[in-house]
Image (cartoon, rainbow, N blue to C red; front, side, top):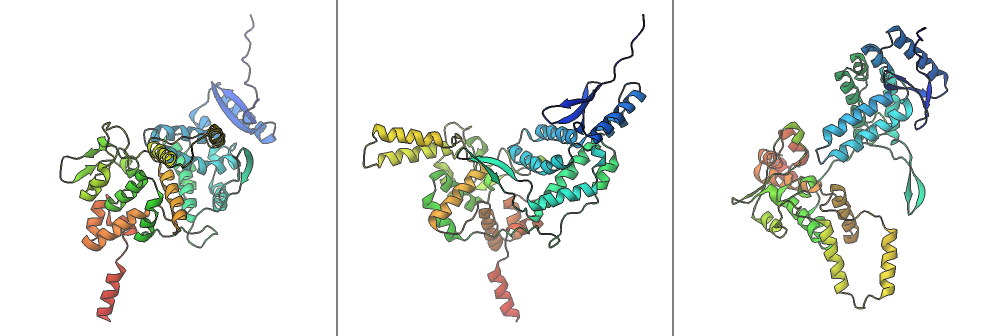
Length: 413
């Protein structure tokens, strides 16, 4: 009986991506746009290496066969596992998706080992321009959202994310060390080197602007604003406050957030709440300690009930039908069981418009607190209360008391 030679895996079309693909030892290898000479050449090279190695992919061959698309997919899956337990999961993953989109669009079919400094510089130009235009829907109609130029810091952060992906690939022995070392030669943008604008310095918000919007926000938002002014906690910390995270046994309450910015570095975060802050929190304490204290769903339901109570005319069936029709045209997302940082900031932005004051965001309240503590008790006290490891970081938050500077200058001439 004549023994037949096993067939050589064929060059195929991967319909979802439009790329050529070949399966070797149970693993799909994408070759670039189907039908092009480049993808055929890559297929021939890969199959030749595979046949020469006894129909097995050696470790070196597998690394050479890895495409940029495959690298991005593997890295993204690793990031999902890494950040899956953290509240910042969606934010971090969205940053990674934003950074990788131009890389995928421009060089997805390229072997990852061939992605070098020149390619990264071209990707950086796309970052400076603001990424890619995208299509979305508004009121059921498709619209084209124009890309807006990114700030220099955002561009540099995205460049670092791409470098980090290649460093991870070297660590996992998916790529040779030279692939990451070559990209390390690409420096971040410096001020004035490109059209990318520098981000503006974050200043404390004047107290009169804060006071002006308090009557235009719901009670939970008002409480979060006051609590930030009194404790200096981050927006992401005040929005997730629960009863179980509070230690109320002492004269000063201690709040230990379930998630915070530096937890992945092994840092602990404790926020002391004084008597004035305790009065703010006490009004929102719940019998179920697992529930969030500041809930938008309950606040909006109470507001709607109060509006109905104050109505001068009775709601007739025609009114109810009209309300149902309006609700059917509104977004389906219902208020959640706690505020997201983005929705908290948007609520403040809308209140600023109603109050007729310049827009400010909740993170500025942390700068207010830091500046006040530094002025009264010194930079070291501000560092401790803000939870910083270094006073160099606190310097970014606590503004110098300019009145004190003028007083000293007037004395020394």
